[in-house]
Image 1 (tube, rainbow, N blue to C red):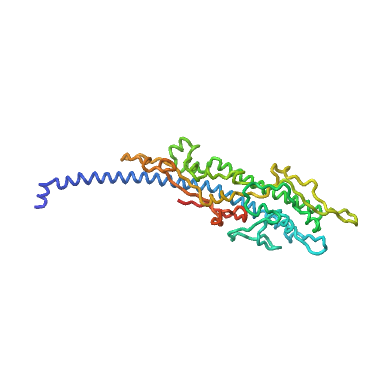
Image 2 (tube, rainbow, N blue to C red):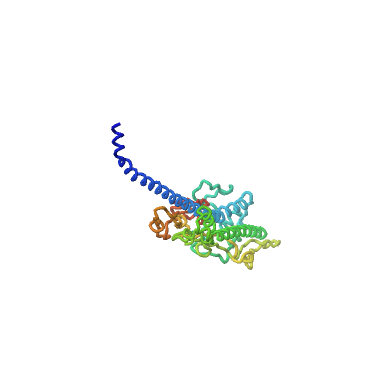
Length: 376
């Protein structure tokens, strides 16, 4: 009772601490609420940028993998299955002894690439478990494709069947025409595929609409709602970002062609002496009648562009911090030098097993194993 009597005589002992503690608790609640609000907005912005960057880089990954297939695996498998012996019959040598397979003859002329460790007479090698698909042209026949070209390399005149082969191999003219037609058909198709792939890629990256739309849907900022055509501009125009590292034809992306094709073969006369003479296409077959640039041979991307895609494109996307109870302007005190306001960052890449040696799996050694990866 004595204690309560003392408290009753001294009400300030409870009142004064309450006047200090209760406002402090209210301030803490407001601080917690405002911190949560700004943290939630930053998390939303980070998720939006990560999603947008990952989706947009997927276009690059698709183009690189599909180009690698067109450069190596597709022509190797097509010609291997068509002209390997068996099922094709070997061609006899004119000297009277020995024979050669059409697949080997055309490869030696530089008509198409093949796997370095290809097994003669077997089915095309399965390369899924290989980190590097060592598919290459005969270096003596196509020295221009030994390394990755740094510019457009067209071949004005290509000998599908060389004069030396025409002399030494018992190849009849009608058979040679069949080889030419099939070769032109295959590489015309491959060229159309690559042309279509690049056209789609170019349209998707012309203004990077996938990035803009993904960011718009996930961030839903007032700027994006008011001006959807400029939504995500901070991220796209970042230094070292998407706009500064576009793949453009004639700059860092090249498609190589041959304009004319020549081949030699024996034309049988029906007479006993001589039974044949060495014929050749005269004039050479004009491939520009099929396509203005000629017959497609290869598509390449410069080493510097592939290396940059491997190390990553930076995306700095600015956002506006919401107002708060304490009237602290986070748009000023928390601004990024890249955007002039608060920002979130993503580093997005497309990488292949040859990342440590330049990230080039397009040509040489076309290996369609690029993957999109995202880093903070």
